[in-house]
Image 1 (spheres, helix red, strand yellow):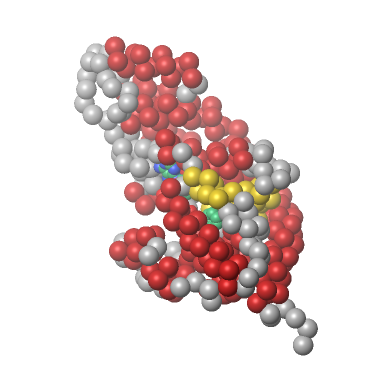
Image 2 (image 1 turned 90 degrees about the horizontal axis):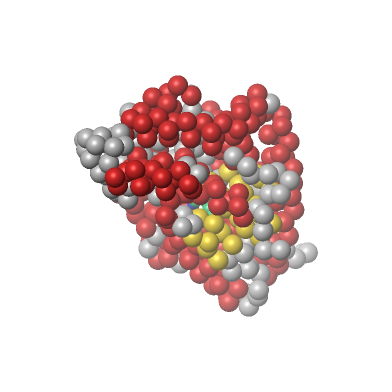
Length: 325
Ligand code: ADP
Ligand code: TRP
């Protein structure tokens, strides 16, 4: 069975953009692949500097994924740092990685341009990511468009290693680029993103969530006038959450005129609780029972670590550092 693998950084609270853009696809893939998903805490160290915040974010991400449908029976869920072998592989890979390859990475340049400290960790981020992928013999890696280049870098590094050591130590993975039809707009109409402060959190306070939805930015087209469902950010959210029949009906009413934004927002709030109500309850249970999460993590780490050890030893062997003296 093919292995799918992906990592999610514990950098804040999960929002519906994360769900419709990424998490939904991770969960779908667990049905057809041997799925490995991890909380990328080593990576998040490049941005999260407060230890308490790191711990809380790791809990939010793991509990959130499980509550949303990631099944610990079907998929292996673990924390990146529970498999420290990956940092050793990062070193082994870095000796075959040209500096120029890292210098060409957009994510690094963009982050530095936004004012982040140009640390070696940030610079070498793609090598750690390559190690994450290669250490589990991953075949498919579901990621957003923004990670496409990192996947190309991973294939380059794996290819260089195999060539240099005349071996087939690493499996070359394929990116599974998530369709970007679901670029979920935020409350202000820009892309929903933590960094814009325009998100609808999946597990946020119920009253606040309702208020936020009702305060979504709209234009001032009067109720009776026809509206274009294809350009309206309120409709875009409605479309993601509503059942198909209701979507078509609403699109028709938009074009005819007579729909007020207030009514659509009210329906979005209802749909939010219909769609995420069960996940919110499950998340609250996990919040109250951290032992359950710890057990899932421990079991996931055990499985992931066994696989990681095997691949790391293959690399050490090929390089001549795994041999008895
Ligand atoms: P943020 O932009 O809030 O910091 P992340 O970069 O942590 O979100 O995103 C994690 C995953 O969620 C990525 O795979 C990304 O493609 C997806 N994602 C984030 N925001 C959106 C959005 N508004 N629409 C669709 N997908 C999104
Ligand atoms: N860099 C990815 C992001 O920011 C997270 C990540 C780390 C990842 N390691 C990975 C994704 C390995 C896929 C595979 O979204």
